[in-house]
Length: 336
Image (cartoon, rainbow, N blue to C red; front, side):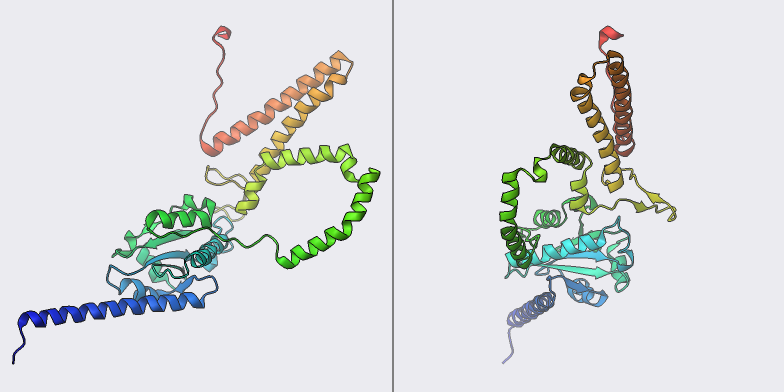
């Protein structure tokens, strides 16, 4: 008995769907296996695995790939911060897995330049740092979505926002490791308990450094300098004090022209100028008023004002050179 043509077409179509579904499930299973073998959950890809999971797989794929492009030979370039960003990328991966243990729709991967130069060309990557999100429907890798380098400022948090804004997947909170371990915390508590009686005795006797006004004065100046110099920004972002000039490796760059980045040296320079102005103003309002000689008062005040004017002028000049924004003076009409 001959089979109906419609029945044959239906069976063929059903068989193709079954094979495609099986292939997709195999790819997801392989990705899950590779992710489980990684400590942070970041899957290391190369040209072969890119071909298997991306270029040789017809869209729509049942998963998305977030790929970090890396180059070990550039790790010594502190201005690129590749190692720091890769650690943040690994932190994003481990946090995503912790928050979504059963999620098989998003996989975080990295690719190294020396191992996968053809993949870098395939994506058109010519600068680092570089992160791309390859969605299920992407056919051409160059059409995948690139994360703007300006979005790296908040590290893992900004990467999570990039993923959530481009997909319907929730990454969840970033789980950063504690500042100190439980063992270190135990030692600190034990030390504090042993030191407490001695400290209480000194406090009652008034013999601690906290009873010295000079210590409080120095501490307040340090806090002021720390706040206006951007030191906290440098610590959080792990900014270098200086970097090597790209055009001339024999030279060092201490001031970076551009609003997207600040080196440690320029922050400390501006902080020093602010501190000088603050100390001079504090000296004039608290110390100079006690000088009985009017001439000395005027000379010191004029000198302090000139130094303050010079310092503020340098800060304004640096801001204009760095950002391109100018500060204009406006005189009262009656002065014209």
